Amino acid sequence: MIDHTGVIVSDFDKGKAFYAAALAPIGYTLIMELPAAVTGHTDVAGFGENGKPDFWISRGTPNQPPMHVAFRVDARKPVDAFHAAALAGGGRDNGGPGIRAHYHPDYYSAFVLDPDGHNIEVVCHLPA
Image (cartoon, rainbow, N blue to C red; front, side):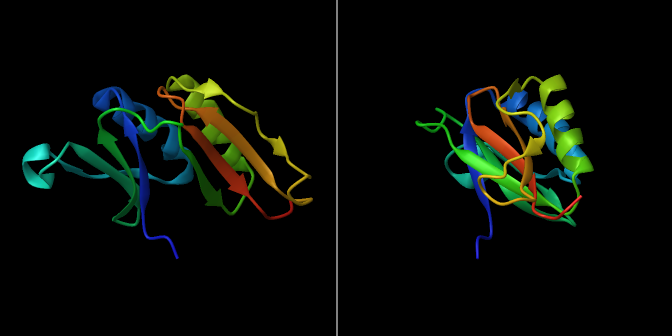
């Protein structure tokens, strides 16, 4: 079981703003920020729900190749809302909301590239 994951962003403030906007429709908020003085390495920000950060961004040189991270939701509407919010927040379209039947008949997802090119997805596996 994965407890948490994250990506490295080149512009920390821009990354925080992007993820705050993009992840809000799925119920994620910025829960914790720690400066380099505390981590001993770099500034980090944790996003999540119910008080537990499970997606982190870190200031630095972005991962190469860029990462792919998928967030699971229990309805299709948040997939659509994520895609719209992520584009409005500075992301680039990498596959609009829709069925990806090559995975399975109910795989409904959307993909955006964050400002550093990380492929961020929100997916619903349930029927409409």
